Image (tube, rainbow over all chains, first blue to last red; front, top):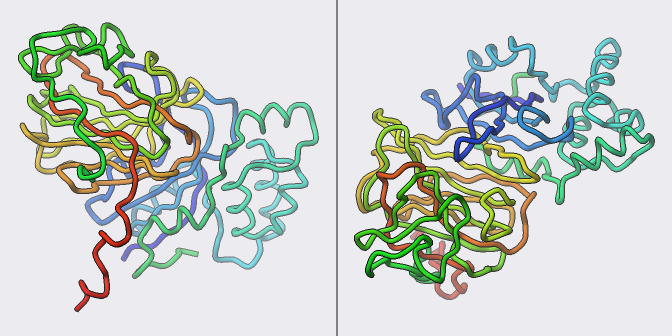
Length: 168
Length: 202
């Protein structure tokens, strides 16, 4: 059975066109070709991250795959699963998320504005940051700001959802 | 690929010429491609050329494979290249890569702000790239799709490069040859020419 879940992961360095250096979503480590042999599929959208450059930056990924593949992904320390199935993120998990999201360039105001739900975090990750409070954040946000932010529903519609369920 | 909408731009049927293949082209990487025996070829490899006409953002470009790339080599069709003479300016492209295996590989790439980023996963192409196959890229808004012999074989969504641009070709080494390059601004078929789903469903 195919189930889907959302992850945040970095870009990996790879060979680009013309012998150049490029980057690609780290989901390649686990699902390099889609559709995979068991019907695996994924779609990614770049999110705010470190300064642009090969290997830098992060993506939010929606993976549709068998549980066995999700298990491999969840065991990868570079992947952080967004908990979509719980009403709110438990208090004990929030400091970790707060640190992670601020590392990605979001302000504390934006992080707190997620309402500590998986949906709120996903919305934050798939839209440009709107609040800038420090010089350091200005640099980060300007480097990563999208021209036209992708929306969750744009990603959602590109993946098959029938017959699948979240793993939360 | 909607050939009824965009058109053939260059059939390369003329005496050997270039690089670039004609005055309608400009080199975008290294020497640029050229006409050899009525086909588009790279003589030194790692060469690209742009059709030197700026098209609106919604655009498509396609080409026919006349000599498939051997194992490890690839050909590229690109679009929305911001600077016709600069392969390293912003652009989207699809890479058709010969793997030597039972299937070949298609990749989407974006060049943006000086960084190459592969968009999404590899796409497996079966059967392998063959003589006479047609490959193309279509950009409509933020949708990027790869087309292979009339079939949409995959698509991506990206919003970093949205303006007008140039289309063109790249050949990684010197063996692959291309033919019949076409494309231009893409406009959807008028509604009255589209099939009526209600009729199809009957």
